[in-house]
Amino acid sequence: MQLLLAAVLVLPLLGAAAALLPAPPGLRGSGPDQAVLRHGVTVTGAVLAATVVLALGFDHGHPAAMQAESDVAWIPSLGIRLHLGIDGVSLPLLVMTALLTFLCALYSYRKMPAGPSPKAFVALILVLESGTLATFAVLDLMLFFLAFEMVLIPMYFLIARWGGGDKARAAWKFILYTLLGSVVMLLGLLLIGLRGGTFDMVALASDNGRGLGHTTQLLAVLAIGAGLAVKTPMWPLHSWLPDAHTAAPTAGSVLLAGVLLKMGTYGFVRILLPVAPEGMRTFAPYLAAFAAVGIVYGSLACLALARRGARGDLKRLIAYSSVGHMGFVLLGIASMTRTGVNGALFANIAHGLITGLLFFLVGALKDRTGTTDLDALSGRTGAALYGSAPRFGGLLAFGAVASLGLPGLAGFWGEMLALLGAYHPADGLSRPAFLTFMAVGALGTLLTAAYMLVVVRRVCMGDPHEAPTYGQAGAAGPADGATREPERVAVGALAALAAPAVRAEVGSDAETGAPEPGSGTGPEPGPGTASTPTPVPDVRPYEFAAWTPLVALTVLAGLWPAVLLGLTEPAVQNLLPGVTR
Image 1 (cartoon, rainbow, N blue to C red):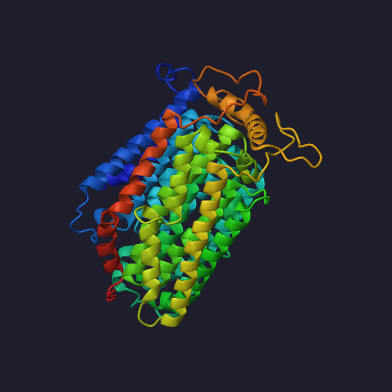
Image 2: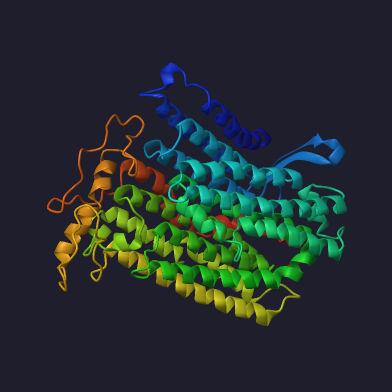
């Protein structure tokens, strides 16, 4: 088990180095680009298989104990050790990271984003995977910081080189925000390690802050919490997130939402709650207040983007929804109760699965239609996606209702437990204040339902009150004072969206028209016309393979929450000694 955990962390780095080397002639297939993309699928698949074996070998009877643990001196003069291990808190995040990275590699094999050589793309994805896996497996503060920082450069280049729109600005905003937060976090980690006499996270957690003075704990929580809050992201430190998501390629958006945001909340649970409990108790009301504001703010931003005529971007809307969903995670953590922290950990996994699926769907929708503009997408009156691509529309509706917290799906349990944690916060916290935060969070659930249902109605069902976006191919403006019939509106709008759909149907990139690696086909010679509109293609086999695991796990976690809670509850109890509820 020790060797298996080490292999899970090292294998992606070896795969990244191998991706930059020329492929052997016998493994190239139709070309070197196809070979390196296949290499990415193979390596991430091997990492996923090793992680599943690790999960199967995990002693589920003792999830609070560190398992697969190895502890080797690395820099003895500074007391820094290569200390690795997993428990019930880190194991689900480890498995989800390996799964989402594999699904991104599988999806990108058939739908490689436009940009430089696939070699660099695959290498960056693998380095990103290694850094995120290490973040959830290391048990030394300095190693945690190194792994935490390791993911920044790969994500920066994924946005800057393979993104779209204003990708350069979004990439710089991402790196500047996160680096500034990391510098402050490093100071807090050094303060804890030097004052506590060790950088070992297990030893510090076992001491439960007794070796740290009150002032030290306050400074540590303020510094480390600021760095973690930027990565989470917590309102008002969230402004880098919508730009990064909007510009990132599909795989980058999935990994950013599904994995990277979890690193911040994991740091709160793994480091601050057990190591500096007094400092956390002092700042918990402020953290809960920011979380509650973030829940409502994210929902209101989504409602503003979803309204008719706002020219809202669907990808940006889902990014803002993450601000609200992560607000529930922070609210559960701020309650400092076992119920709230378990809810936060459950919501972490649920958000990774559901929002990962939504970003996959929105990326595929852009490949088909050439846009993620809600007004353009909903300008196709009538049945819209339900009529032309019923399985695709059904998956989008499923992701939306899962995101709004429908009972029976994964999104429900985490938010409910976080609100219950705020209803009865830990001793020493103001219950009236937390009841107020709970009420604000409950309002956020209603707002979430509102904007998600608006998205489903407009994109999946179409909006009979909207006309297509004029000025595109096959769409003509209405006569003066005339009202266009719904049938003519639908024909014009579908024709406007036909050109990229035709190219997507033959396996080309929707934006560049470049054929996919190994497809052997190029774009069609011309777009569709208003008289012969091309419907939006339905779910393709490779998309079905990439998305089905996320749907299945969302349903499984919703119907059988004990799968996750049985792992996290004992581990959380170990991290919060003396907390009874």
